[in-house]
Length: 140
Image (cartoon, rainbow, N blue to C red; front, side, top):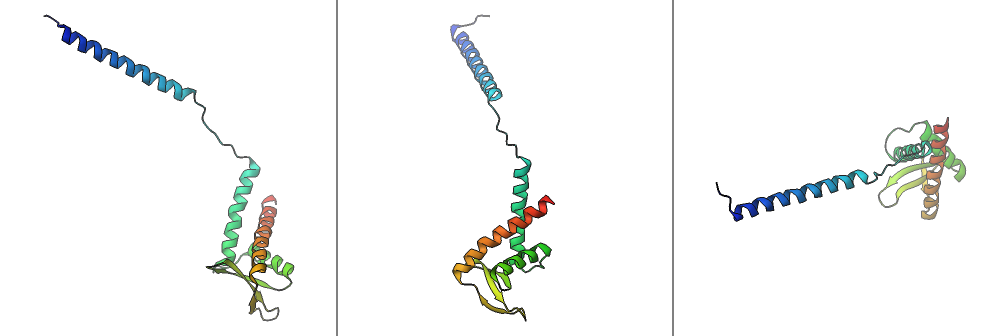
């Protein structure tokens, strides 16, 4: 059997392509193995803070929702009412998010709403009070 130069050149070309592919694959594997992998380790305090933030959001949604309020939600409203000097209630509002209502001290009926500036201050205070209560309960 006679092997021509044409066949020999094709065999050598295919062989060189296979060698270059193997070299490229082995380089890529070596590069992947040497790269550092990112790893995030959360501290206990960070985990506690993340958990507390989730609880805070749930409590605020419970305050503004139509569900029955638990002891913690009532404690938050009592603290805000004491700071404001009149009984307060919270309700959702599409435009402002949360609206604070001033209640009558005797009958508990709505006597008015807080002005927009006061409402914004009370929203911030609501978040602060809720966080402090949740953190206090997490430590216990």
